[in-house]
Each structure stands twice: as C-alpha cells, then as structure tokens.
Length: 297
Image (cartoon, rainbow, N blue to C red; front, side, top):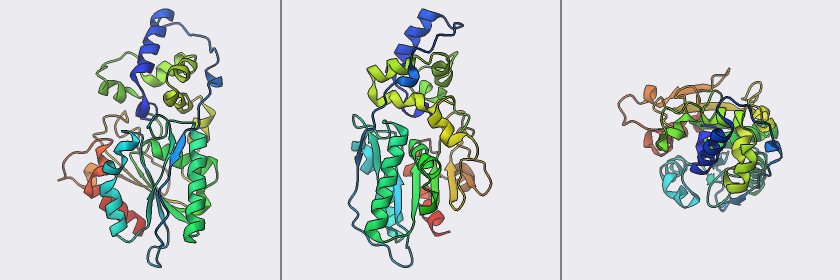
C-alpha cells in the first residue's frame, strides 16, 4: 500500500489521459517530477497531560494511518487508545503531514521531523528517556523514516507496527477499491513509467503529491527501504493480515522479515476471530490487546 494508501481518482484520471496520449509502450521523458514541490502539511497534537509511572516508564506515541480523515481519527482509534491507557500507559496520538484533513499527505521527511519534534516534547514534558511507537499503515513509513533516516532509534525502545508498508507493494489493491480491476498497469508501474505525472499530481492535488516519494527510485524511499529497515536497539513487533485488500500483494507488502522482528499475521494469532482488513485491523480489540502485550514484553 505504500502508493495505494492515498492514491486517488485524480491521479488515475491524469494517468489514464497521459497513457492514452503517449501509448502504453512509450517511455515518456521526465519533465521534472523530481522537482515537484511537496508541502509539509500541519500537525494535530494532543495535550501531554499524563505522567508515566515506574511500571510503565515509557510514553507511547501513536501514529495513525492515512485511512479516513482527521475527523474520523477519534472513532477509529478509540479501542486502541482505551486499551493501551487501561493497561497503564500514557498514550498520545499524533497526526502530522495534514493537508485538507488528510493525515500524512505532506512531505514525508518533513512529517518524520514533525514526529521527532513531538517525541522530543513528550520526553521533555514527561521526563522519560525513551518512548514507544505504535504506528499503522502510512504512519509506519513516517515512523521508519524517523527511526532510520533521522536517527531517532536511540530514543525509541519499541516500535509496534500494524500493517506496515514495506517492500514489494504495487498499489493494485487501491485501484480495486475504486472499482478498477484487472488493470494492465499498477500505480507503482504507472508513476515509474510516467514520472512527469508527479508534477501533474502536485499541481492538481497537493495532498497527494508525496506519492512520488514512495517510488523505489525516490531518495525518500531509498532512505528507508535500501538496506535494513529495522534499527539496532529498537524492538520491533509487526501485525499484518492476509486479508489485506489495500496493501497488495497481501502478505507480501506488509511482511517485514528482518532479523529480530516479531512478525505476525492476525489470522494466525486469532484464528477464530472475525476477519479484518487493512484498516479494520487497527480497530480490533484483539489487536489492541496484542499491542498492549508487546509494550510490556
């Protein structure tokens, strides 16, 4: 889902028009997609009004995904926050890169810096040496950029990642969600073949301009995904679903198989539970209890 998370009808329309114009076999010249300006976006920060105790010394910074809008956040994350707080943790949900009410729509390095600044504020306010991170979907990209590219690993003890966007994603799942099935070209292939669309996209939909930053050819992508993603000193726990309809191919795109990672699939841990998808996994009580257990491990 790295591209699919926020892929839109606007991009599809622009892409299809361009594909018709140049033909599917033509390699269009890069007319400046790399120069497309990606706005940073704003933040929505919670009050830091909780003091960790000796049994739960690390505050938990929660980074939601990009599904839904900021007006949906409280409902989407109520189960998770309620469970984690009931387990004794100070938990703070942070939203960054906000453009037009959409989370993580801004420049990814800027969003990672926003997270870094908030983590610093949490540590200074609470007196904690380290925090734990809980991130979902697009929030995991920002979390990993913070941990790896910005060197945030020393101040993070645990990273709990839900349907993380890793390697091998094609974006086809989001096209399917929009009713476009059996497309001969995936979003990743489309933007790779027609890089000038990045400039078009930035112009017509600023809140989607950062999609080009998640192409394998992008320095932003390479800063996170080239080499090992996980960082020394951080304990990683991952929960994904084999029923993932957005992060495709399912069980490939969100499968973080690196040394030391506690990698799990929802269906294996909770075989009798109702099915979950890419987004609904984060609202499951089973997931929330699992996250609380990972923070205690």
